[in-house]
Length: 311
Image (cartoon, rainbow, N blue to C red; front, side, top):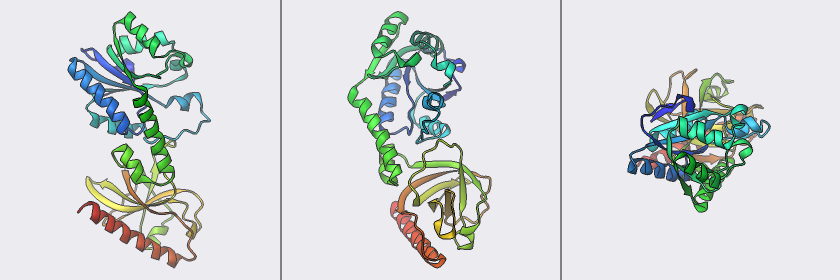
């Protein structure tokens, strides 16, 4: 897969099949659409192109929306690399770009830059300044500029929308296993390990404190989770706490992981931690001793779960 930073940097000698979307989560519904894109490109000796936008349009047009995304842009790139597409175009979404008319967007971006011979798009897709154009307009542009439009049905589009909503709702409730089923891969949190308060070490469970890469990243419900991550290329497991550590007087939300069988200094390392199963809610214990006892139980639970999935 070739990655292009904007349509202006796209180059290809061949004409293309294009689909357009946010593809947040790159979940099972998205993968069906992308599979159709890839198959269509192969059948017609064309190249497949996914056109996506960053920042998310709502971040630019509705700055107070507080939108939370399942993936950071880098996570999205990583997941799309596995789908078999030829090109991923991440076009900068700006106020200026949002003011392009529908015809300018089709002519200048889809036809002249991306060399679209076919566009696969949802029945309810809207585009152009103030999102005034629809799929019927796109079909008329297709007749004018010589490309075909393949419509994704209402049922398929709604499946994708429902999946995204279900994933967000599941994560908000801490139901990571349900979310992972819709995603077809484990939900991930990516960032850099930074210094924390050192309380985990004092309790006998040293933790790696994850500072997220992006502030728009959706964070699941507070609680304790079984997780995995590749550290120096080796798969390691652990347990993660998302929350404020109320038993020891914490106030700010942190994401801390106690990795099993990892004794090295992880500070400043970039890690991608995958959430596998939720163990319990975060709670305030009556004493530090009770907290330590609960953490030992969490570790036993985690080790049993890891043994089960690797059996």
